[in-house]
Image (cartoon, rainbow, N blue to C red; front, side, top):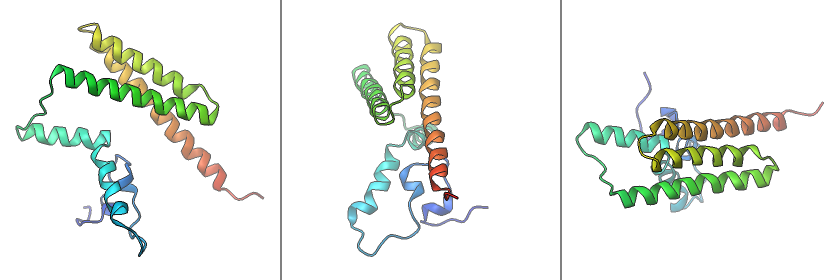
Length: 151
């Protein structure tokens, strides 16, 4: 049984957002923003948002978006995904992140705008998720290699 309490480190959530990786104690000169930013990061974490939406839906509280609002959110999400991947490709001089992001975003767009082609949308979402996981684990292994002492 997991211990209950306000410390997010004890919960060990699976979303791995900044709030859930926060250190157990903060330095004495930490300001208000250092306390609020992890909470705000968790508020927009896709895994956390999915959980919130599921819980609210079970309680009968739905998120009502018009088609125009849905389209704006879709464009923002696709632009953010391609933008972050382009930045990562530029920094690492690797084409894989931007290639995966453009292909996944194209599949999402095709599936969304061509009617009942939900398989394309889901394939695009899975491709974007796979690209993010590939980069996450690549960076994790790179950090581990850099942390090893040189003999």
